[in-house]
Amino acid sequence: MAPFLAYMLLQPLASIFRIENSALPWYEHSPEHWVYPLQTVVCLILLGFFWRHYPLRPARGVGIAVTLGIAGILIWFTPSWLYGPLGVADWPQPTFEIPLVVAEGTPVWSLLGLAERTEGFDPTLFEGQPLVTVLVIFFRFLRMVVVVALIEEIFWRGFLMRYLADPDRSFTETAFGTHTWKGYWITTLAFTIVHLPEDWLGAFIYGSLAYWLAVRTKSLFACVIMHGVANLLLGLYVMVTREWGFW
Image (cartoon, one colour):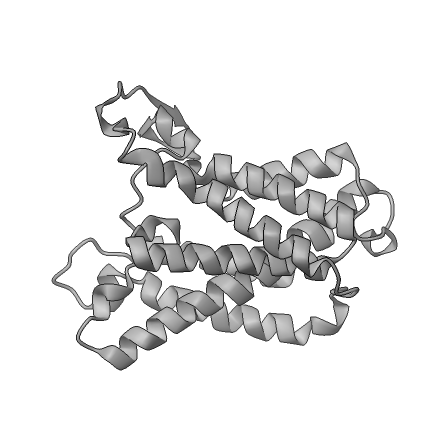
């Protein structure tokens, strides 16, 4: 759990230290540009320290993992891609609120992923500084494709899913990929909730596919590959469309 918990505890620093004033230095108005690399380095150190404990083998199911990674991420960002063509901005805009989870005034359509995603981590902040821009993008992809894929799959499928299968004994005694409906619902819903509301539909579908892959292949390695492929494609999509809110 340590890499995942470190990641989650460091994540709020971007909001805590943000000062909404573009006249200030970048590390004050856009602290995510130093918080995310910090997350990456800390989590990589923890992953390396605990590496021998992670049951990544057997390394099988790569083909189906890649296929599900592509399918899952296409489903995830398609609603946002349809936001403009469908003219969602002109639809009636009922709103909703869930205290501490969903901000007041959030459009109900966003629960279906039908939302603009232009606000977020913007690597063009350092345009005019090619070396810095390359480093920013490198760390952003390293975080998405390697660190997040490892820490999330190790935690969600490697630990929580197995723990829920039989809470009365050590989770290490439960075979990876053991199916229980309690494990499916709690793991998948928890995976969904930790994402933004606009991502809930995509996250739930993706989480369901990842759960099925774990049960089908009995391979944590396959789940990591699926997550890495999905995040790589999402990162490329974001770089092309500049929908920074996806990452």
